[in-house]
Length: 92
Image 1 (spheres, rainbow, N blue to C red):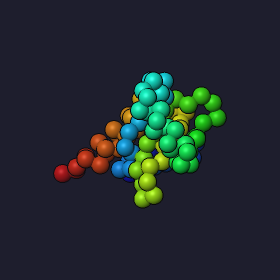
Image 2: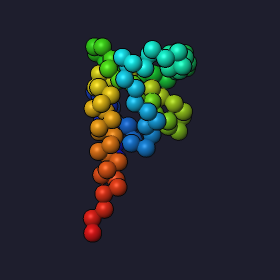
Image 3: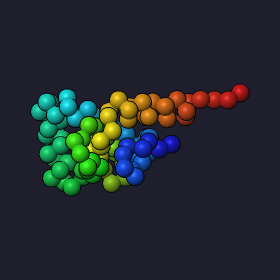
């Protein structure tokens, strides 16, 4: 199961560590430190043509990758929740 996170990007549901709201997440010093580290390591993929609304932190085979998206964190969280529900759904 994959989650569409913006533009032409889809990430495996199981790789998503967290979804940040960019308006509130950057107020935390720890989050800013994480963003600086990932930027210095070249592990940020910017999917925005305009103002970013969310960030999706994923853990893959090569480590952490942060995707910056124009899609709201609420919408992305709903897509992830729907994916989990679909995986848990059993037909008898």
